[in-house]
Length: 280
Image (cartoon, rainbow, N blue to C red; front, side, top):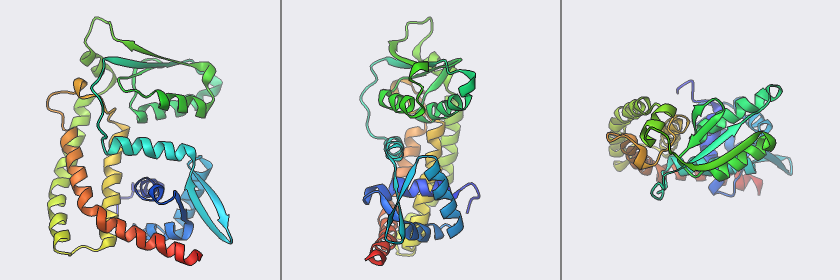
């Protein structure tokens, strides 16, 4: 298992792909059992869950002497946004409008400024100039959520505008994002997973792969593909280069994940239902 495949990252993946679709709550014992499939021990799971609770992603509740964990409102919003971008829901044609966010957060609140920057990059904003971020996507709801989350209403302003500068929209994109570098990362993903997809598809068709293995492979695939959320701003087609590999990588990811999903879901449900039975 990749050492970068942290317990926390794995928990995010399981909540995003499974738990939030099953009532958004799970017994800690079931979560520990699921994470065992990846080589994570009970101590690591409990430590990660505690850390995620302190960070505002999870909340716990007691039922008898058992602890259950569910995504907070913040966690649900992040999972929905991530799912929308991972599974590339269709978007309407770009109308040529840019959203602009600017802030003047004082030095004594630098920690908020750093956190805001991280969220802006994750959401797909590009840094045009100092403290000025832009995106061609309608992320008004996301901006409102971030501003409310960090209580920085008095330091932030945002606008919607049409670019009227001396350059083109495409040249504006080049200032904010390195699409060549992102395209190279997509090429590496395609090269790495194309053969694995063919091999695993054959194994699944011959019933030579266990449900547990499919669950692990599916989660690992989502984990790897999810990394693109931190580098790919999900620009409209109108602003992408001709030889863009993002769509090909997405198709490979969806095809691969589709063949794994049924047995992976079966394994998840067996552990999840075990927790329900134990509760009764």
